[in-house]
Amino acid sequence: FVQVRSMRKARDIRDQLEALCERVEVDNTSSAPEDQDSILKAVTAGFFYNTAKLGKVGEYQTVKQHRTVYIHPSSVLAKEEDLP
Image 1 (cartoon, one colour):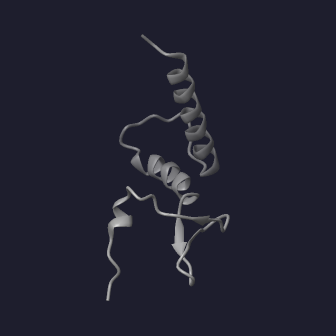
Image 2 (cartoon, rainbow, N blue to C red; image 1 turned 120 degrees about the vertical axis):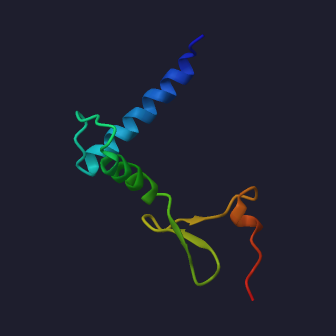
């Protein structure tokens, strides 16, 4: 069975990808499987908003909006030990 909620989520993801393609000037009419550079550009543009760097006080700040974020306890990064 096809669930309405699943279809809405798929449509939302497609809309997000389409917006990312437009932002990095990827032609949305081309669908050549060998054109991986265009796909990588779109995906990378979406990841940029989720990047963060470690600040001087030990908190992570997002690069774009300078919000404080934390590593999830189940993340592999949360299990790293401090280096000497």
